[in-house]
Image (cartoon, rainbow, N blue to C red; front, side, top):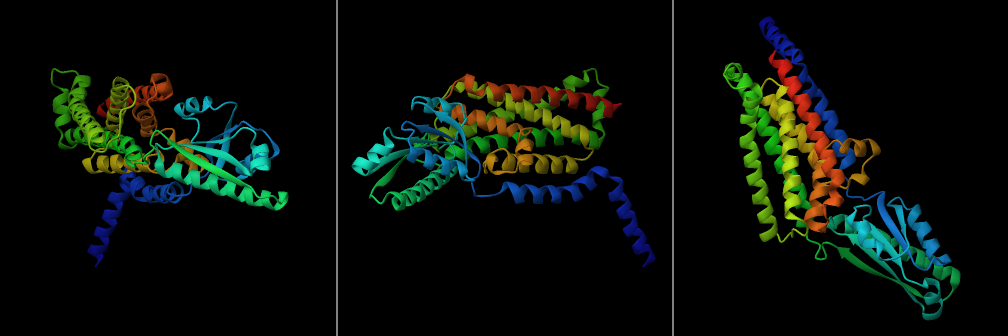
Length: 368
């Protein structure tokens, strides 16, 4: 029995000695419960919307006040003319526009009818449908209150319009997210494992004493996964267009360029993981858990980011897949030009440079 207890103590010493494993074992459950508890929700809150009030009368203002007071909406823009709506959606500054018809109050009093148009960005059909339902319910509630106050029969009708995805196909939403997740996992996970495998088997030192420079050896390990990722990108893109019916509404050239940039960022992340781990198992755990979960939960792939608490919204800004998914939706589905994704390209470029510098610097230190 004493020997058994001694062996147990030895195993505990082995576990406690590996600080990275301890962080994974004890820290990952905490991270998971926080992410799953706050990020996964079907409720849409604090969604950015715009108001186009052509009438500007007492009734429209009362409805707008009720919409503004709702926890579901955050009025971000007030438009002066309907021509600004398309530009606003293309810039990605709103998810819904509520447009009141001209002479709203007079139409209600004289004809008993007035119209409100609800225009939603349907690149995420689930969110668009939810926002339309929320807005319709608030308008209907306002109508009931006005009926009691005015004691005259009238009806406020709502007209809905879904931009970019009028058929409400779910593929329009998940294709950019799946594309980002596939590229991230293949580039980051497989690159980190391939490099760590050389370190784990002791062949990395043999490679480094060869006539080739260390940077060329690293590039030689990375290039095959870059090529495989490019093939996967083309495959997913072809299936999306010809099987799922998701169009490439914008420039194919810029879509490919942004994807190549994202692949480069993912490869740099894989190199970074390889400098932090000594075993393939640890590299797989870090790549799988630290990359896959944030991509699924914090990139906007499955759940709207604006629904999350502010700390998680800030955390989502360091997830490369978030910016890639936004850029792909703009270029592929909305058909915007390069000017609409300059911000995303700059952020991904900065991420690529910073991660690559840290990875190469750390890699040299570890080898010394």
